[in-house]
Amino acid sequence: MADRPVRWGVLATGGIAASFTADLVDLPDAEVVAVASRSTESAKAFAERFGIARAYGEWGALAEDADVDVVYVATPHSAHRAAAGLCLEAGRNVLCEKAFTLNAREAGELVALAKERGSFLMEAMWMYCNPLVRRMAGMVRDGVIGEVRTVQADFGLAGPFPPSHRLRDPAQGGGALLDLGVYPVSFAQLLLGEPSNVTARAVLSDEGVDLQTGALLSYESGALASVHCSITGGTATSASVTGSQGRIDIPDGFFFPDHFVLHRDGRDPETFRADPSAGPRNSLKHEAREVMRALRAGETESPLVPLEGTLAVMRTLDAIRDRVGVRYPGEGDRRDDPQHDRRGDPQGSRGDQPEENEPVATPA
Image (tube, rainbow, N blue to C red):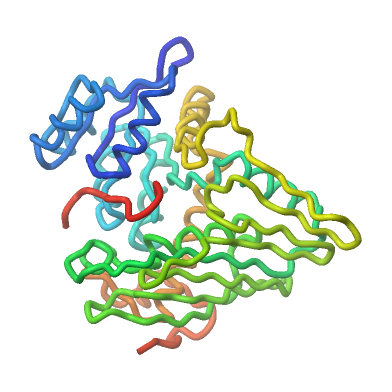
């Protein structure tokens, strides 16, 4: 791949697949050569829209296409284990949308499979690849605001979403947490790592998915992270991290910010803005470039989105769902799973398969 474009395959043809492909075709060192859907008509329409040479009416044909260097999996998270697993089994490299899987067990299976095959695997956590987020995280690591004490982040959509919507469908891993809450949790763990204790409350729908969830993540250092997600109210999508010597605020769109503000004791606030030459704030090109950089370097995972970090986030999402009582079809009782989370009270507190992953707001 050093002297030619990286050849991509796209698995699924929904809204997020379209957003990512639109950014891919604009990159001179990327080429989208194939697309797959369970519907031949959908695959052909997508291929015609983006000028893609091959359109498959089944996932397996794309997985077996030896001309594909890496597959972007854009199905709902309920199908990530099957879709990404099929590609990894066939020897393809994979970039898989988030939430990475339904649970930590499935995530562990994909990571083990990638390592067995020697294939590249990465969660499409585009926030971690965003240059301004990386700058903010680097400042925190360098101690600019001292020792981190608290992290806060929220992501909520106003809705309302009818019971027929994928966000309300347990069979598709519905609810606020896996679709939206993965961002606040990932933001907290980018700065603090995996928590030692998890508590949570939620309001559940009649279908049994979470409409609104709040969680408190506790750390051995004494730090706390407060995260919130909702499909019943549009929140500010803001975030902040407070340290012993200052604070950083991201007032809007924390997972794809155009600026953040540094507050330090005794100094005027400093505003750091995104580089306009990096493209639109909602660009997915940063994660695409990171995948291609890693592939050309012969790496099997990205240092920006490490697999252990992805597994840690999935363990925390599992813990939150345990606390609020959300189970998806086929999961059974996860307490029998050796990866079952045991941080905090396992009983917790509970408040009173199409293939396309349609975005409900910004690219996610």
